Amino acid sequence: MTTSPTPAKGNDFIRWVEEKSEVVMADLGDKFPPATVGVDALHAETSSQRIEEVLLGHELPDEELLEELAALEAIPPLSDEELARQALEDGGGDADPATPE
Image (cartoon, rainbow, N blue to C red; front, side):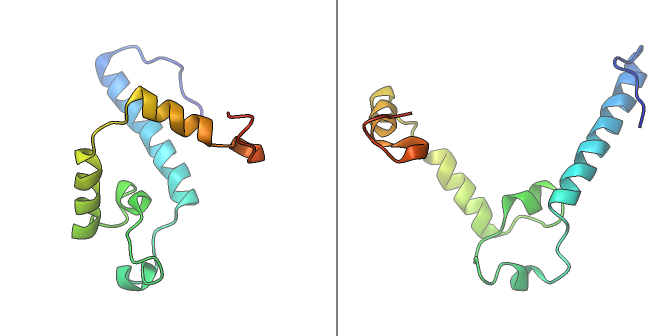
């Protein structure tokens, strides 16, 4: 697909953004194909809905996912000291706490 790097006018820009969005959604759709089985069967082993399926429009968010997102938003942010402590405890890729990453 050939597109111009920058559109010239307002309406052209809107069309350009929509085309780019469609390309991105097509790429994501290939990586996360829509479910061909029922939602209950899809999440039977995980018992939770995948947010990718909701964001890609393959599923509607269920009550459990909405509650989980609300709970995550209610959590206070970590302090700088706590973030530093966690970073020092994490051994990183080599799992060596003596060389934190």
